[in-house]
Length: 140
Image (cartoon, rainbow, N blue to C red; front, side):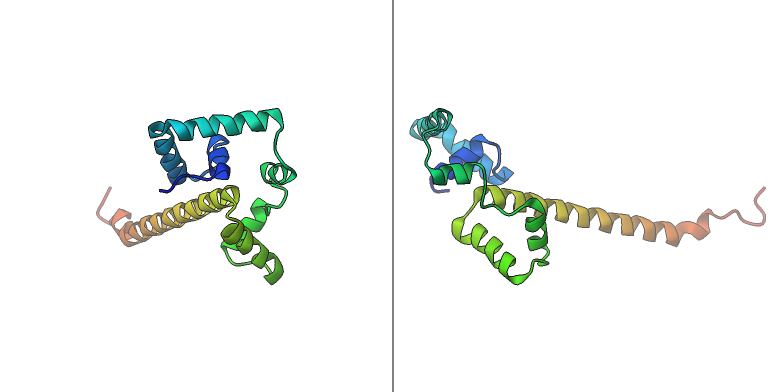
């Protein structure tokens, strides 16, 4: 992994990165004292209020789509102008916050699909063995 951007470092500090990305950043931070110092400096600047208007917009996520909009984007249910904006926001702007939320939603959807498949297998097994569970005429 290349060195994380300032936004990615701050997203890591705020626990907003996807688990895989957070793990990579953490590994880099453990092995690179200069990168750790950069993170400390960024947090100190943020705490002192020395950020620009753009930083305030990013920090408060004023241009980010809502979680509902991200979910609709994920299932391709957003209308054209808003869908295009969300795609631009994720791909061109590279918003790590929204990407982390989207990754979490995809992971949750994948887990939900696996659970549904497991339930269908259980139901199928139950139906196929239901006749074996019925009492026979000769049974007391």
